[in-house]
Image (cartoon, rainbow, N blue to C red; front, side, top):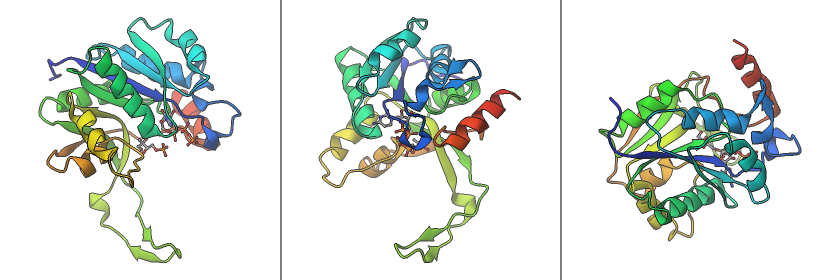
Length: 234
Ligand SMILES: Nc1ccn([C@@H]2O[C@H](COP(=O)(O)OP(=O)(O)OP(=O)(O)O)[C@@H](O)[C@H]2O)c(=O)n1
Ligand SMILES: C[C@](O)(CO)[C@H](O)COP(=O)(O)O
């Protein structure tokens, strides 16, 4: 059952795609006839539970993104992100609050995951009916090693407890902003996703996992583009 509360999506496309090595942000790369940006945007935009999508771009790429978002009328705006992924999330939360969307639940999704599907988005929205914070993830099929700085293996955590984080990550209205309010006062703050910000800075809020899908991969390096192309062809 999907939540009756309003829900908006933040599409994070504020990175420059250095690891993909394309000479341009990877979200503008073509994937079976549509850009990565458009595929991610369409998945969120076309989902009936999502009222609008806020797109976050790296400075200098807002105009290029608006060419894409022009065909998606439920795009709320295209705004500039910040230096790190977390800065882009913070900019988005500020914009949403300033524009009167502060009472909506929020799904934050990586534009770099263009194969996200409606089932994952629906499950995420539905989970917000009973949980204040949810993260999509898949169980690890690899044994994961923890090492020290010298490269010596110091721990092999039980695989049954290990998941690989994906997006979207969903938060009831106000929860993610409250977590960032605390996080931004911490000089040691660093985070590569948003669930970890809630986990660390709002310890009383349980973060629930929603089953993802291996197809919901992140396009990070050149090999990932080839894998995504192949997945779209099947
Ligand atoms: N300052 C940033 C950095 C990243 N992202 C977004 O966060 C998602 C996950 O980041 P990642 O895959 O690391 O993308 P890039 O930062 O573009 O890649 P790289 O680290 O290789 O430069 C991407 O959709 C990316 O556009 C963002 O909105 N703002
Ligand atoms: C949010 C994320 O996609 C979950 O797997 C990931 O943490 C983003 O990390 P990146 O270093 O910005 O690719």
